[in-house]
Amino acid sequence: MTQFIASIIGPYLLVTGLGMVLSRRFYLRMMSGNDSADPILLNLSGAVHFVLGMIVLRNHFLWNNLEAALVSLFGVLLVLKGVVLIAVPERAVQTTEKIGNTLSVSTAGFLIVGLYFCYIGYR
Image (tube, rainbow, N blue to C red; front, side, top):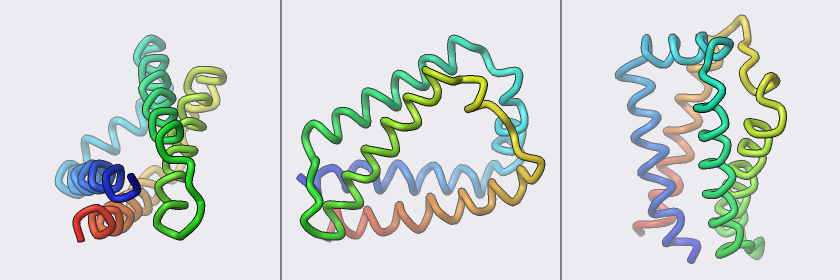
């Protein structure tokens, strides 16, 4: 199950990281416009994060090796993001003054973790 979930998560993270590289201005606008985000879209985003995270955890709550733990941790992070977006949306939309730095770190993280999950899922 670890390989199966990693084979889904990896390409998603890679495509998102690639989008952050190719469409940086769009992602900067998206991140800086959080304060004016539509409340319904925030709630729906929270629901999607929560449900996907619970699907991962319901099928994969394994911590017996690094790869399994990382997949389970990804599920935990999805659930936590969903909880924040649903329960305290005002907190979730606060933007940092260093959006460019945040986007650069996020981009690198998405690409590195995406590559690693692809390695796990497709080796």
